[in-house]
Amino acid sequence: MAKIKITQVKSAIDRSHRQKNTLKALGLKKMHQTVEHEATPQILGMVKKVEHLVKTEN
Image (cartoon, rainbow, N blue to C red; front, side, top):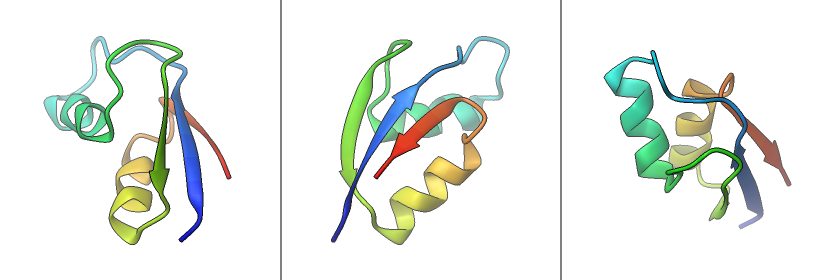
């Protein structure tokens, strides 16, 4: 599978618990932190839920 890089570009402050938990599940703890994941349907779905808080690269 292809890999994607996910970088948090906006803060999780004043966001719902669901969005905060999604960021945590993706492995993002701090601003401007980057993680790399396989581009599975589950990961892509989580990214779509918080796409306004993150930047993705293929």
